[in-house]
Length: 323
Image (cartoon, rainbow, N blue to C red; front, side):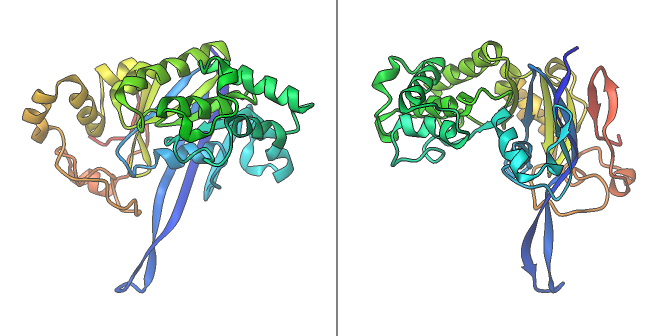
């Protein structure tokens, strides 16, 4: 079995909410609440859930774009949360992020060669201007933007959405990282080009020996991309396990609802009342009992009192549910 490359332990991230006039205080929003998981070398772990569940915040924490409120993140055995700024700056070469929107994640006023080559300048990895250009050309070829020379001096508005996202991916791999967090990298693209981006990520995973955290709200995409899947709800990890087990044998009521939509939409609409109550993700404020109790059709008095921890229900399959 491959070694663990990156691990989150009891990770929390809170934000200050709006002022409550009646309580005369501001609420605390638990965007990520006591989340723990690990990713092995060469593995793709998917995080799925509704908008607002904390999956993107988790990804940003893992690559140190956000600072945690509490908890730890270990990369190759080193605690990133305890590193000095200088040491962390050097370590950043090993983990990168692909953002959701290629229209906003790259500077529209810079040429592609400058956008992709910027990380090389930051880390002093280009010996000369020609060396930088050669490395950028290699990165463009790795993401199938060929002939690479035709793209070097273009601006982002001269590329299609799919080409822009490939350029963003090229920027993320030019430092030869070991770990990439991909935050819904196809959700802003036309359906016709999504498969190409997904296949590119899978190809790069094999060719460049990448480990990946893949963020998505689409279970069918997670099924195609991921070795394991974690399900998040209101900042908590409610189920995690091998993709095959999550798809064929979901245990948590929320996971069952997500899987039912993918399997058979018509049957899901007929049986929805037996799976999950209508509703949406409210503010992730700390509350007593299970975080899913308001939408769970199987809610019992124990659920209102107990906050269930992840318990093993199968091989590498864990679920947080009292029932």
